[in-house]
Image (cartoon, rainbow, N blue to C red):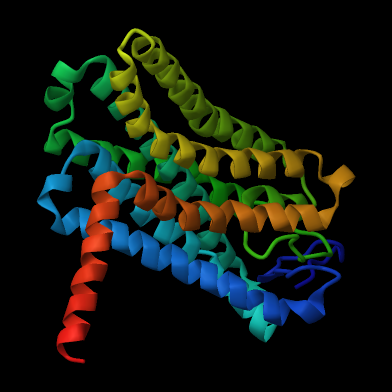
Length: 319
């Protein structure tokens, strides 16, 4: 809808895009994306179910993993159904308010995941560097409070993003450069000064992702310092308990940093790289996290094998 001056629009919807240049292949590309989404959901649900039903896994590391799996399901579900609708049905339109809700969900869940990864790093630090104090620090009520703090922190940090977008007028184009709504993508369409949005985004990245990554790195430096003073057998055991979490950290932070860099130097790299990195950022961590923990964590791996053997035995009885 045009204002009287004729050059600003009060947009009621945005247009999401698929993969420019290969529109004909999008229909078929949606099938592997759908498969990855199902792997992410089923894999993380399996992790949650195993941890919930197996009392021996009601330990801080696994309870934090349960939180991580829940977040991964939510973050992939916040974007993948719409992305598949774009590829399969060319449903590229998204209402303005729905875009803001999706944007808030994606960013706040990312903040929550970063917080949980930090809590997991602190758990590993206490377990290896201060094992006698670990049980006293990570009590069940305290773990619940950490989970609640992660939710509040992610929601509070990202709550201003839809408000800052809502106040902006938009000019001419309402076509976004991704398959879902991101704050840094939406604000670029505004025909007003977006310095407040830019500063806000920088503050969020530094105070959340930046701070968390520094603290996680510091925790592992302290872990490394402690582990180097142990025997070879103790070193191997300590490192084995950290491998899965280190993989989860890289799986989350590398795509996030990559997407941020692509947005920063977008004019030089082109729009297709934006879209590929954005899709990787949301679908890869939820897919890989349950696989990494299922393979690297002995207790979870054994439990999964037991379930398969039990199911196989049951089917043999009815054969």
